[in-house]
Length: 92
Image (cartoon, rainbow, N blue to C red):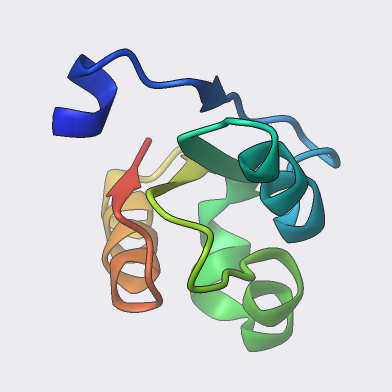
């Protein structure tokens, strides 16, 4: 939150466009906060291969916001907790 309030340069979430390599490139050019692509919460919770493929991060990839969609609040909540355990600094 402190980073966001201090004039952060944010890489917004893009489906199919904000994977780790792109986020790291943006950070090298001044981005201070980045979002994951929009991830379907139910797939994230239920499918380890999906998680491994679409939620990748790195020590230089922080602060990182995990971005989820879903229609079941319980599932979205589980996805948010899992993302936090995997290194997300915030969720959306």
